[in-house]
Length: 498
Ligand code: NAP
Image 1: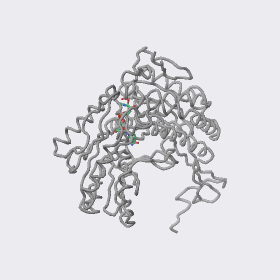
Image 2: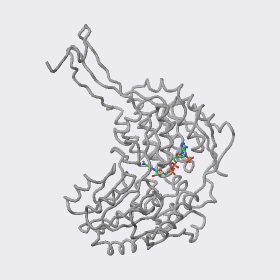
Image 3: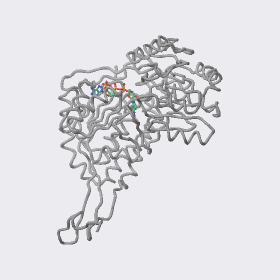
Protein backbone atom coordinates (compact mmCIF):
# COMPACT_ATOMS: atom_id res chain seq x y z
CA UNK A 1 0.00 0.00 0.00
CA UNK A 2 1.34 3.42 -0.94
CA UNK A 3 1.75 5.85 1.92
CA UNK A 4 -1.02 8.40 2.33
CA UNK A 5 0.03 12.05 2.69
CA UNK A 6 -2.01 15.15 3.60
CA UNK A 7 -2.00 18.92 3.52
CA UNK A 8 -0.91 20.56 6.76
CA UNK A 9 -3.18 23.50 7.55
CA UNK A 10 -3.64 25.27 10.88
CA UNK A 11 -1.73 22.58 12.74
CA UNK A 12 -3.67 19.62 11.30
CA UNK A 13 -3.04 17.01 8.64
CA UNK A 14 -6.06 17.24 6.33
CA UNK A 15 -7.29 16.09 2.96
CA UNK A 16 -8.24 18.45 0.15
CA UNK A 17 -11.75 19.82 0.63
CA UNK A 18 -12.72 18.13 -2.65
CA UNK A 19 -11.35 14.78 -1.45
CA UNK A 20 -9.45 14.42 -4.74
CA UNK A 21 -5.98 12.85 -4.75
CA UNK A 22 -2.98 12.26 -7.02
CA UNK A 23 -0.19 9.69 -7.02
CA UNK A 24 3.51 10.35 -6.98
CA UNK A 25 5.69 7.70 -8.66
CA UNK A 26 9.39 6.82 -8.81
CA UNK A 27 10.90 8.03 -12.13
CA UNK A 28 13.40 5.13 -12.03
CA UNK A 29 10.58 2.60 -11.68
CA UNK A 30 7.17 3.83 -12.69
CA UNK A 31 5.46 0.86 -11.01
CA UNK A 32 6.48 2.15 -7.59
CA UNK A 33 4.02 4.57 -6.04
CA UNK A 34 5.78 6.78 -3.47
CA UNK A 35 2.58 8.18 -2.03
CA UNK A 36 -0.96 9.43 -2.54
CA UNK A 37 -1.45 13.18 -2.00
CA UNK A 38 -4.38 15.56 -1.79
CA UNK A 39 -5.14 17.28 -5.07
CA UNK A 40 -6.08 20.62 -3.59
CA UNK A 41 -7.78 23.70 -4.96
CA UNK A 42 -8.50 27.32 -4.19
CA UNK A 43 -10.57 26.57 -1.07
CA UNK A 44 -7.64 24.70 0.52
CA UNK A 45 -5.29 27.58 -0.21
CA UNK A 46 -7.78 30.02 1.30
CA UNK A 47 -7.98 27.93 4.48
CA UNK A 48 -4.19 27.85 4.66
CA UNK A 49 -3.98 31.62 4.24
CA UNK A 50 -6.55 32.13 7.02
CA UNK A 51 -4.45 29.95 9.33
CA UNK A 52 -1.25 31.76 8.36
CA UNK A 53 -2.91 35.11 9.00
CA UNK A 54 -4.16 34.06 12.44
CA UNK A 55 -0.72 32.80 13.48
CA UNK A 56 1.44 35.57 12.07
CA UNK A 57 1.35 38.27 14.78
CA UNK A 58 2.18 35.89 17.61
CA UNK A 59 5.01 34.29 15.61
CA UNK A 60 6.43 37.70 14.68
CA UNK A 61 6.28 38.81 18.31
CA UNK A 62 8.86 36.20 19.39
CA UNK A 63 12.41 37.56 19.74
CA UNK A 64 14.31 36.64 16.57
CA UNK A 65 16.82 34.39 18.44
CA UNK A 66 13.86 32.35 19.72
CA UNK A 67 12.65 31.69 16.19
CA UNK A 68 16.26 30.99 15.24
CA UNK A 69 16.50 28.42 18.03
CA UNK A 70 13.58 26.47 16.52
CA UNK A 71 15.28 26.57 13.11
CA UNK A 72 18.54 25.36 14.64
CA UNK A 73 16.65 22.46 16.21
CA UNK A 74 15.17 21.67 12.78
CA UNK A 75 18.77 21.53 11.52
CA UNK A 76 19.67 19.02 14.25
CA UNK A 77 16.69 16.83 13.33
CA UNK A 78 17.64 16.95 9.67
CA UNK A 79 21.18 15.86 10.52
CA UNK A 80 19.74 12.83 12.36
CA UNK A 81 17.46 11.98 9.44
CA UNK A 82 19.84 12.85 6.59
CA UNK A 83 20.32 9.37 5.14
CA UNK A 84 16.64 8.44 5.29
CA UNK A 85 15.62 11.75 3.68
CA UNK A 86 18.22 11.33 0.92
CA UNK A 87 16.86 7.85 0.11
CA UNK A 88 13.29 9.11 -0.05
CA UNK A 89 14.39 11.95 -2.31
CA UNK A 90 16.23 9.59 -4.65
CA UNK A 91 13.13 7.40 -4.92
CA UNK A 92 10.96 10.44 -5.49
CA UNK A 93 12.98 12.43 -8.02
CA UNK A 94 15.65 10.05 -9.27
CA UNK A 95 18.99 11.75 -8.71
CA UNK A 96 21.77 9.63 -7.26
CA UNK A 97 22.23 9.25 -3.50
CA UNK A 98 25.47 11.21 -3.42
CA UNK A 99 23.54 14.18 -4.78
CA UNK A 100 20.42 13.82 -2.66
CA UNK A 101 22.66 13.68 0.43
CA UNK A 102 24.11 16.97 -0.82
CA UNK A 103 20.61 18.40 -1.30
CA UNK A 104 19.64 17.54 2.29
CA UNK A 105 22.98 18.94 3.51
CA UNK A 106 22.16 22.23 1.81
CA UNK A 107 18.92 22.29 3.79
CA UNK A 108 20.89 21.69 6.99
CA UNK A 109 23.42 24.41 6.11
CA UNK A 110 20.58 26.86 5.46
CA UNK A 111 18.95 26.07 8.80
CA UNK A 112 22.22 26.52 10.70
CA UNK A 113 22.97 29.74 8.83
CA UNK A 114 19.56 31.07 9.97
CA UNK A 115 20.31 29.94 13.52
CA UNK A 116 23.34 32.25 13.51
CA UNK A 117 21.62 35.03 11.58
CA UNK A 118 18.98 35.19 14.33
CA UNK A 119 21.59 36.96 16.46
CA UNK A 120 22.62 39.34 13.68
CA UNK A 121 19.99 40.67 11.24
CA UNK A 122 22.05 43.83 11.31
CA UNK A 123 20.51 47.09 10.23
CA UNK A 124 22.19 50.42 9.57
CA UNK A 125 22.80 53.18 12.11
CA UNK A 126 23.67 56.47 10.50
CA UNK A 127 24.03 60.10 11.58
CA UNK A 128 21.10 62.43 11.04
CA UNK A 129 21.63 65.79 9.35
CA UNK A 130 19.91 67.37 12.36
CA UNK A 131 21.13 67.80 15.92
CA UNK A 132 19.95 65.49 18.69
CA UNK A 133 18.43 63.03 16.29
CA UNK A 134 19.48 59.49 15.36
CA UNK A 135 18.49 57.33 12.41
CA UNK A 136 18.63 53.57 11.96
CA UNK A 137 16.89 50.70 10.22
CA UNK A 138 15.13 47.57 11.42
CA UNK A 139 13.64 44.74 9.39
CA UNK A 140 10.03 43.62 9.76
CA UNK A 141 8.30 40.58 8.22
CA UNK A 142 6.15 41.10 5.13
CA UNK A 143 3.36 38.97 6.65
CA UNK A 144 2.37 35.86 4.74
CA UNK A 145 4.81 34.35 2.24
CA UNK A 146 3.66 32.14 -0.67
CA UNK A 147 6.39 29.65 -1.60
CA UNK A 148 6.29 27.74 -4.90
CA UNK A 149 9.15 25.35 -5.64
CA UNK A 150 10.41 23.02 -8.42
CA UNK A 151 11.26 19.33 -8.18
CA UNK A 152 14.99 19.31 -8.90
CA UNK A 153 16.15 20.31 -5.39
CA UNK A 154 13.17 19.16 -3.32
CA UNK A 155 14.81 19.86 0.04
CA UNK A 156 17.33 22.64 -0.59
CA UNK A 157 15.09 25.04 -2.52
CA UNK A 158 12.13 24.87 -0.08
CA UNK A 159 14.65 25.48 2.74
CA UNK A 160 16.20 28.44 0.91
CA UNK A 161 12.76 30.05 1.01
CA UNK A 162 10.96 28.75 4.09
CA UNK A 163 13.84 29.22 6.54
CA UNK A 164 14.54 32.94 5.99
CA UNK A 165 10.80 33.64 5.68
CA UNK A 166 10.23 32.09 9.11
CA UNK A 167 13.27 33.65 10.74
CA UNK A 168 11.97 37.11 9.87
CA UNK A 169 8.55 36.36 11.39
CA UNK A 170 6.52 35.57 8.29
CA UNK A 171 4.11 32.66 8.22
CA UNK A 172 4.06 30.55 5.07
CA UNK A 173 1.81 28.81 2.59
CA UNK A 174 3.97 26.33 0.70
CA UNK A 175 3.18 24.56 -2.58
CA UNK A 176 5.89 22.09 -3.58
CA UNK A 177 6.24 20.67 -7.11
CA UNK A 178 3.72 17.91 -7.86
CA UNK A 179 6.66 15.61 -8.68
CA UNK A 180 8.28 15.90 -5.22
CA UNK A 181 5.58 16.34 -2.57
CA UNK A 182 6.92 13.66 -0.19
CA UNK A 183 10.30 15.30 0.51
CA UNK A 184 8.48 18.60 1.00
CA UNK A 185 6.14 16.98 3.52
CA UNK A 186 9.11 15.65 5.49
CA UNK A 187 10.47 19.20 5.73
CA UNK A 188 7.16 20.34 7.22
CA UNK A 189 7.22 17.44 9.69
CA UNK A 190 10.71 18.49 10.77
CA UNK A 191 9.54 22.06 11.35
CA UNK A 192 6.65 20.80 13.48
CA UNK A 193 8.93 18.55 15.52
CA UNK A 194 11.33 21.45 16.03
CA UNK A 195 8.53 23.49 17.58
CA UNK A 196 7.04 25.73 14.88
CA UNK A 197 3.56 26.64 16.25
CA UNK A 198 0.35 25.77 14.41
CA UNK A 199 -0.60 27.93 11.45
CA UNK A 200 2.97 29.16 10.94
CA UNK A 201 3.84 26.60 8.25
CA UNK A 202 1.09 25.34 5.95
CA UNK A 203 1.62 23.00 3.01
CA UNK A 204 -0.95 22.62 0.23
CA UNK A 205 -0.38 19.92 -2.40
CA UNK A 206 -1.74 20.11 -5.92
CA UNK A 207 -1.18 21.46 -9.40
CA UNK A 208 0.35 24.76 -10.35
CA UNK A 209 -2.74 25.77 -12.27
CA UNK A 210 -5.01 25.35 -9.21
CA UNK A 211 -2.96 25.67 -6.02
CA UNK A 212 -0.18 27.82 -7.52
CA UNK A 213 -2.61 30.26 -9.15
CA UNK A 214 -4.65 30.55 -5.93
CA UNK A 215 -1.48 31.43 -4.00
CA UNK A 216 -0.17 34.04 -6.40
CA UNK A 217 -3.53 35.79 -6.66
CA UNK A 218 -4.52 35.72 -2.99
CA UNK A 219 -4.73 39.32 -1.76
CA UNK A 220 -3.44 38.51 1.74
CA UNK A 221 -0.18 36.96 0.57
CA UNK A 222 2.29 39.80 0.51
CA UNK A 223 5.37 38.09 -0.92
CA UNK A 224 5.74 35.32 -3.46
CA UNK A 225 8.98 33.42 -3.76
CA UNK A 226 9.11 31.23 -6.84
CA UNK A 227 11.72 28.98 -8.42
CA UNK A 228 10.93 27.34 -11.73
CA UNK A 229 10.69 27.97 -15.44
CA UNK A 230 10.87 31.40 -17.05
CA UNK A 231 7.43 30.86 -18.64
CA UNK A 232 5.68 30.37 -15.28
CA UNK A 233 7.88 33.02 -13.65
CA UNK A 234 6.71 35.56 -16.17
CA UNK A 235 3.07 34.62 -15.51
CA UNK A 236 3.64 35.05 -11.75
CA UNK A 237 5.30 38.43 -12.27
CA UNK A 238 2.25 39.54 -14.23
CA UNK A 239 -0.29 38.55 -11.57
CA UNK A 240 1.79 39.59 -8.56
CA UNK A 241 2.90 42.80 -10.29
CA UNK A 242 -0.69 43.91 -10.86
CA UNK A 243 -1.45 43.29 -7.19
CA UNK A 244 1.73 45.11 -6.09
CA UNK A 245 3.08 42.09 -4.21
CA UNK A 246 6.74 41.55 -3.56
CA UNK A 247 7.91 38.79 -5.87
CA UNK A 248 11.19 36.95 -6.20
CA UNK A 249 11.77 34.81 -9.28
CA UNK A 250 14.61 32.31 -9.73
CA UNK A 251 14.26 30.97 -13.26
CA UNK A 252 16.05 29.06 -16.01
CA UNK A 253 19.61 28.94 -17.26
CA UNK A 254 21.72 27.97 -20.29
CA UNK A 255 25.07 27.91 -18.59
CA UNK A 256 28.37 27.96 -20.49
CA UNK A 257 31.69 26.40 -19.55
CA UNK A 258 34.62 27.86 -21.48
CA UNK A 259 37.84 25.84 -21.81
CA UNK A 260 40.89 27.75 -23.08
CA UNK A 261 43.93 26.07 -24.65
CA UNK A 262 46.05 26.84 -21.56
CA UNK A 263 43.62 25.07 -19.20
CA UNK A 264 44.30 21.96 -17.15
CA UNK A 265 42.29 19.74 -19.51
CA UNK A 266 41.82 16.86 -17.07
CA UNK A 267 40.36 19.27 -14.53
CA UNK A 268 38.12 20.86 -17.17
CA UNK A 269 36.96 17.40 -18.19
CA UNK A 270 35.98 16.44 -14.62
CA UNK A 271 34.16 19.77 -14.41
CA UNK A 272 32.08 19.38 -17.53
CA UNK A 273 31.13 15.77 -16.76
CA UNK A 274 29.84 16.83 -13.35
CA UNK A 275 28.29 20.07 -14.64
CA UNK A 276 26.50 18.59 -17.65
CA UNK A 277 25.45 15.15 -16.44
CA UNK A 278 25.13 15.59 -12.65
CA UNK A 279 21.44 15.56 -11.66
CA UNK A 280 20.95 14.19 -15.21
CA UNK A 281 21.39 17.76 -16.46
CA UNK A 282 18.31 18.90 -14.55
CA UNK A 283 19.85 21.79 -12.66
CA UNK A 284 19.18 25.43 -13.36
CA UNK A 285 22.97 25.78 -13.20
CA UNK A 286 23.72 22.69 -15.35
CA UNK A 287 26.46 23.10 -17.96
CA UNK A 288 24.47 22.96 -21.16
CA UNK A 289 26.95 24.76 -23.43
CA UNK A 290 30.62 23.84 -23.67
CA UNK A 291 32.73 26.44 -25.46
CA UNK A 292 36.11 25.07 -26.52
CA UNK A 293 39.08 27.09 -27.69
CA UNK A 294 39.94 26.02 -31.24
CA UNK A 295 43.44 24.55 -30.58
CA UNK A 296 42.07 21.98 -28.12
CA UNK A 297 38.64 21.43 -29.76
CA UNK A 298 39.24 17.99 -31.31
CA UNK A 299 41.39 16.67 -28.48
CA UNK A 300 38.99 17.71 -25.73
CA UNK A 301 35.98 16.25 -27.54
CA UNK A 302 37.80 12.94 -27.85
CA UNK A 303 38.58 12.96 -24.10
CA UNK A 304 35.01 13.97 -23.27
CA UNK A 305 33.31 11.26 -25.32
CA UNK A 306 35.64 8.62 -23.94
CA UNK A 307 34.68 9.50 -20.37
CA UNK A 308 30.99 10.33 -20.91
CA UNK A 309 30.31 6.96 -22.49
CA UNK A 310 31.53 5.26 -19.32
CA UNK A 311 28.91 6.98 -17.14
CA UNK A 312 26.73 4.34 -15.56
CA UNK A 313 23.00 4.95 -15.93
CA UNK A 314 20.52 3.45 -13.47
CA UNK A 315 18.56 3.69 -10.27
CA UNK A 316 20.12 6.37 -8.05
CA UNK A 317 19.86 4.11 -4.98
CA UNK A 318 22.65 1.97 -6.45
CA UNK A 319 25.86 3.65 -5.22
CA UNK A 320 27.77 2.66 -8.37
CA UNK A 321 25.40 4.62 -10.64
CA UNK A 322 26.52 8.00 -12.05
CA UNK A 323 23.30 9.24 -13.61
CA UNK A 324 19.67 8.60 -12.69
CA UNK A 325 16.47 9.07 -14.67
CA UNK A 326 14.82 12.32 -15.74
CA UNK A 327 11.86 13.41 -13.68
CA UNK A 328 8.87 12.14 -15.68
CA UNK A 329 7.67 10.90 -19.04
CA UNK A 330 6.68 14.36 -20.27
CA UNK A 331 10.14 15.73 -19.52
CA UNK A 332 11.76 12.71 -21.18
CA UNK A 333 9.74 13.29 -24.35
CA UNK A 334 10.60 16.99 -24.33
CA UNK A 335 14.33 16.18 -24.12
CA UNK A 336 14.06 13.59 -26.92
CA UNK A 337 12.29 16.21 -29.05
CA UNK A 338 15.16 18.64 -28.47
CA UNK A 339 17.60 15.95 -29.60
CA UNK A 340 15.64 15.66 -32.86
CA UNK A 341 15.61 19.46 -33.20
CA UNK A 342 19.40 19.51 -32.77
CA UNK A 343 19.84 16.90 -35.52
CA UNK A 344 17.48 18.75 -37.88
CA UNK A 345 19.31 22.01 -37.26
CA UNK A 346 22.56 20.42 -38.43
CA UNK A 347 24.38 19.95 -35.12
CA UNK A 348 26.43 16.73 -35.06
CA UNK A 349 25.38 14.13 -32.44
CA UNK A 350 28.45 12.22 -31.30
CA UNK A 351 27.19 10.45 -28.20
CA UNK A 352 23.88 9.13 -26.90
CA UNK A 353 20.67 10.66 -28.17
CA UNK A 354 18.26 7.91 -27.20
CA UNK A 355 16.05 6.70 -24.39
CA UNK A 356 17.95 4.13 -22.28
CA UNK A 357 16.02 0.94 -21.53
CA UNK A 358 18.62 -1.66 -20.48
CA UNK A 359 17.45 -4.08 -17.77
CA UNK A 360 15.50 -2.46 -14.94
CA UNK A 361 15.80 0.91 -16.69
CA UNK A 362 12.98 -0.11 -19.01
CA UNK A 363 10.61 0.71 -16.16
CA UNK A 364 11.76 4.32 -15.86
CA UNK A 365 12.50 7.51 -17.77
CA UNK A 366 16.19 7.28 -18.64
CA UNK A 367 18.10 9.09 -21.41
CA UNK A 368 21.67 8.46 -22.53
CA UNK A 369 24.23 11.22 -21.90
CA UNK A 370 24.05 13.12 -25.17
CA UNK A 371 26.66 15.33 -26.83
CA UNK A 372 26.27 17.51 -29.91
CA UNK A 373 29.31 19.13 -31.51
CA UNK A 374 29.60 21.94 -34.08
CA UNK A 375 26.64 23.69 -32.46
CA UNK A 376 26.05 27.20 -33.78
CA UNK A 377 24.70 30.07 -31.67
CA UNK A 378 21.55 30.48 -33.75
CA UNK A 379 20.47 26.88 -33.12
CA UNK A 380 17.68 26.24 -30.64
CA UNK A 381 19.77 23.69 -28.74
CA UNK A 382 22.32 26.47 -28.10
CA UNK A 383 19.66 28.95 -26.97
CA UNK A 384 16.85 27.07 -25.23
CA UNK A 385 16.88 25.38 -21.85
CA UNK A 386 16.57 21.61 -22.40
CA UNK A 387 16.86 20.56 -18.75
CA UNK A 388 18.28 17.13 -19.43
CA UNK A 389 21.59 15.33 -20.10
CA UNK A 390 22.28 17.10 -23.39
CA UNK A 391 25.49 19.05 -23.93
CA UNK A 392 26.09 21.40 -26.87
CA UNK A 393 29.71 21.98 -27.88
CA UNK A 394 30.80 25.07 -29.83
CA UNK A 395 34.20 26.15 -31.13
CA UNK A 396 35.66 29.55 -30.18
CA UNK A 397 38.40 31.20 -32.28
CA UNK A 398 39.92 33.04 -29.31
CA UNK A 399 39.16 34.39 -25.83
CA UNK A 400 36.99 37.29 -27.05
CA UNK A 401 34.96 34.96 -29.24
CA UNK A 402 34.50 32.55 -26.31
CA UNK A 403 33.10 35.36 -24.17
CA UNK A 404 30.86 36.53 -27.02
CA UNK A 405 29.47 33.00 -27.43
CA UNK A 406 28.96 32.59 -23.69
CA UNK A 407 27.02 35.86 -23.52
CA UNK A 408 24.90 34.99 -26.55
CA UNK A 409 21.95 33.87 -24.43
CA UNK A 410 18.76 35.30 -23.03
CA UNK A 411 19.66 33.64 -19.71
CA UNK A 412 22.40 34.60 -17.28
CA UNK A 413 22.57 32.32 -14.26
CA UNK A 414 25.93 30.54 -14.00
CA UNK A 415 29.14 30.51 -16.05
CA UNK A 416 32.59 29.01 -15.86
CA UNK A 417 36.03 29.36 -17.38
CA UNK A 418 38.97 26.97 -17.24
CA UNK A 419 42.28 28.68 -17.81
CA UNK A 420 45.67 28.94 -16.10
CA UNK A 421 46.12 32.51 -17.33
CA UNK A 422 45.20 34.90 -14.52
CA UNK A 423 44.56 37.74 -16.94
CA UNK A 424 41.97 35.72 -18.88
CA UNK A 425 40.33 34.52 -15.67
CA UNK A 426 39.98 38.05 -14.30
CA UNK A 427 38.77 39.38 -17.65
CA UNK A 428 36.14 36.63 -17.84
CA UNK A 429 34.89 37.46 -14.33
CA UNK A 430 34.42 41.02 -15.55
CA UNK A 431 32.81 40.21 -18.91
CA UNK A 432 30.63 37.13 -18.43
CA UNK A 433 26.96 38.15 -18.19
CA UNK A 434 25.85 35.90 -15.35
CA UNK A 435 24.92 36.05 -11.68
CA UNK A 436 27.61 33.47 -10.87
CA UNK A 437 31.06 32.87 -12.39
CA UNK A 438 33.32 29.97 -11.48
CA UNK A 439 37.02 29.87 -12.31
CA UNK A 440 38.47 26.40 -12.80
CA UNK A 441 35.30 24.85 -11.39
CA UNK A 442 32.07 23.69 -13.05
CA UNK A 443 28.91 25.82 -13.37
CA UNK A 444 27.33 24.02 -10.42
CA UNK A 445 28.22 24.10 -6.73
CA UNK A 446 26.41 26.95 -4.98
CA UNK A 447 26.99 27.41 -1.24
CA UNK A 448 24.16 28.55 1.01
CA UNK A 449 25.84 31.62 2.50
CA UNK A 450 26.53 33.27 -0.86
CA UNK A 451 24.06 35.08 -3.12
CA UNK A 452 22.36 32.87 -5.69
CA UNK A 453 20.52 34.13 -8.77
CA UNK A 454 21.03 35.40 -12.26
CA UNK A 455 20.74 38.26 -14.72
CA UNK A 456 18.64 38.67 -17.90
CA UNK A 457 15.68 36.22 -18.13
CA UNK A 458 16.97 34.15 -15.22
CA UNK A 459 15.13 36.26 -12.70
CA UNK A 460 13.90 39.64 -11.60
CA UNK A 461 16.97 40.89 -9.82
CA UNK A 462 16.71 39.22 -6.42
CA UNK A 463 19.25 36.90 -4.87
CA UNK A 464 18.57 33.97 -2.58
CA UNK A 465 21.13 32.67 -0.10
CA UNK A 466 23.14 34.28 2.68
CA UNK A 467 21.95 37.61 4.02
CA UNK A 468 20.65 38.68 0.59
CA UNK A 469 17.51 36.52 0.78
CA UNK A 470 16.37 38.51 3.82
CA UNK A 471 15.64 41.43 1.49
CA UNK A 472 12.94 39.33 -0.14
CA UNK A 473 11.05 38.32 2.99
CA UNK A 474 11.58 41.50 4.98
CA UNK A 475 10.38 45.08 4.87
CA UNK A 476 12.93 47.62 5.97
CA UNK A 477 11.68 50.22 8.40
CA UNK A 478 13.64 53.45 8.73
CA UNK A 479 13.50 54.93 12.20
CA UNK A 480 14.22 58.57 13.14
CA UNK A 481 14.37 59.43 16.84
CA UNK A 482 14.45 63.13 17.61
CA UNK A 483 15.47 63.93 21.19
CA UNK A 484 15.93 67.71 20.65
CA UNK A 485 12.50 68.53 22.10
CA UNK A 486 11.66 70.85 19.21
CA UNK A 487 10.34 70.59 15.67
CA UNK A 488 13.29 70.15 13.30
CA UNK A 489 12.83 70.19 9.54
CA UNK A 490 15.16 68.15 7.34
CA UNK A 491 16.49 70.00 4.27
CA UNK A 492 14.92 73.24 5.54
CA UNK A 493 16.69 73.80 8.88
CA UNK A 494 19.88 72.34 7.44
CA UNK A 495 20.88 73.80 4.15
CA UNK A 496 24.32 72.22 3.87
CA UNK A 497 25.23 74.40 0.89
CA UNK A 498 25.31 77.53 3.03
P1 NAP B 1 7.83 24.86 -13.50
O1 NAP B 1 7.06 24.01 -14.42
O2 NAP B 1 7.89 26.31 -13.76
O3 NAP B 1 7.20 24.59 -12.04
C1 NAP B 1 7.72 25.17 -10.87
C2 NAP B 1 6.64 25.26 -9.82
O4 NAP B 1 5.60 26.14 -10.27
C3 NAP B 1 5.94 23.92 -9.55
O5 NAP B 1 5.62 23.84 -8.18
C4 NAP B 1 4.69 24.04 -10.41
O6 NAP B 1 3.63 23.21 -9.98
C5 NAP B 1 4.35 25.49 -10.19
N1 NAP B 1 3.45 26.07 -11.19
C6 NAP B 1 3.16 25.61 -12.44
N2 NAP B 1 2.26 26.43 -13.04
C7 NAP B 1 1.98 27.42 -12.16
C8 NAP B 1 1.12 28.57 -12.20
N3 NAP B 1 0.38 28.86 -13.26
N4 NAP B 1 1.07 29.37 -11.11
C9 NAP B 1 1.83 29.11 -10.03
N5 NAP B 1 2.64 28.03 -9.91
C10 NAP B 1 2.73 27.20 -10.98
O7 NAP B 1 9.34 24.37 -13.36
P2 NAP B 1 9.87 22.91 -13.05
O8 NAP B 1 9.69 22.08 -14.26
O9 NAP B 1 9.33 22.40 -11.76
O10 NAP B 1 11.43 23.20 -12.80
C11 NAP B 1 12.32 23.36 -13.83
C12 NAP B 1 12.64 24.83 -14.07
O11 NAP B 1 13.05 25.44 -12.85
C13 NAP B 1 13.80 25.02 -15.02
O12 NAP B 1 13.49 26.08 -15.90
C14 NAP B 1 14.94 25.41 -14.10
O13 NAP B 1 15.97 26.13 -14.71
C15 NAP B 1 14.23 26.18 -13.06
N6 NAP B 1 15.03 26.24 -11.82
C16 NAP B 1 15.60 27.42 -11.49
C17 NAP B 1 16.38 27.52 -10.35
C18 NAP B 1 17.00 28.84 -9.97
O14 NAP B 1 17.29 29.00 -8.79
N7 NAP B 1 17.24 29.76 -10.88
C19 NAP B 1 16.58 26.39 -9.54
C20 NAP B 1 15.98 25.19 -9.91
C21 NAP B 1 15.19 25.13 -11.06
P3 NAP B 1 3.46 21.70 -10.56
O15 NAP B 1 4.64 20.96 -10.10
O16 NAP B 1 2.20 21.25 -9.93
O17 NAP B 1 3.39 21.84 -12.05
